[in-house]
Length: 402
Ligand SMILES: *Cc1c(COP(=O)(O)O)cnc(C)c1O
Image 1 (tube, rainbow, N blue to C red):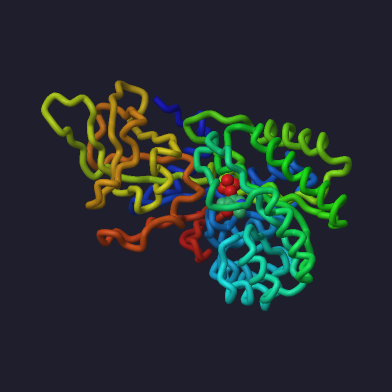
Image 2 (cartoon, rainbow, N blue to C red):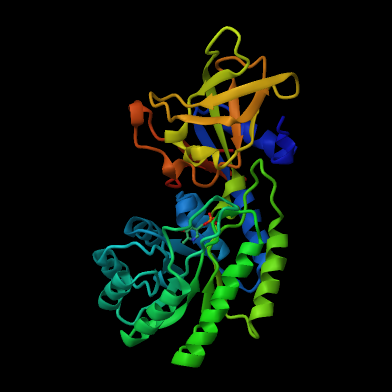
């Protein structure tokens, strides 16, 4: 059985239980103090890097405001995220347009708002940037193919072969843009630190050949995200990632260029706990051993990363510690895809009843922002954020002082 205190220490747990007690389920509570701690750990591990928080991981305003205070920059994927971040008074020179898939009109919108840093991985997009964001700084995303060791891979769809990255940076210069750097993303929840070694080696080759052959001196490496949150499958600590990655950089570069990191999951994941009530428990025949446990939260309402059982969240209950048995965990909607875990053989206490609660740990990232608007009428899961003084909603409205 999963041990809750391997993931959330007693003190934080007691606090969470007290704060979240009377709220209707399903809900997610995000501990802002934990985000603060993760940010401090990240800065300590990578003192030489500039952080661009990947807003998509959790776009709640309390998170953006906190990270703004702590000095983070922001990686933005759409004009809607841009509007949100700008509306909080964050200046456009702290924003990177990191999505390689964008409309020409949106590039123009970002440019008009003062954003000058753009990712690309294709000719068409680069042409659109040259036309709609003249003089912008360009970084090209290279394809990382071997990301089978990432639990949520971001391969294939994004990035281009290094040879094409080379051509795009040459073309950027010809079109009056600033060829600024290289980016990659080794896949989210990447458990193999060696993946950064390969990516950095590709980057080094591009830095060198562009300088030697084209007199283009790149200045920046954007190493994306990929750092882990704590789920069931163990990973190394962030400090381990940092010391290895720093060594790769030092081995490949005489002087380390400007380094950008775009963490999402590792910064926010561990700060959230999702509470979901058991709606019904059943068996499909009289002798089957596994129980179906249906919850009031599912794949369409915050738990989309259980797709293919990719991300295995630790799930705990108030009855943990006694006898347990195999369960299939499923959501409340009328879609048979709404099953979170069947092959993963989760075990929960045998005395669980309808009305009992399940707590899904490490659910701060990639949960609520993925929820459907109202499949079967179920409203999107609510997220609450708390610090030492109060609870806030996703728009930073005060819900309750504590
Ligand atoms: C999603 C995303 C990230 C964040 O990745 P994590 O693995 O959650 O840290 C960073 N950069 C880009 C471009 C992304 O799309």
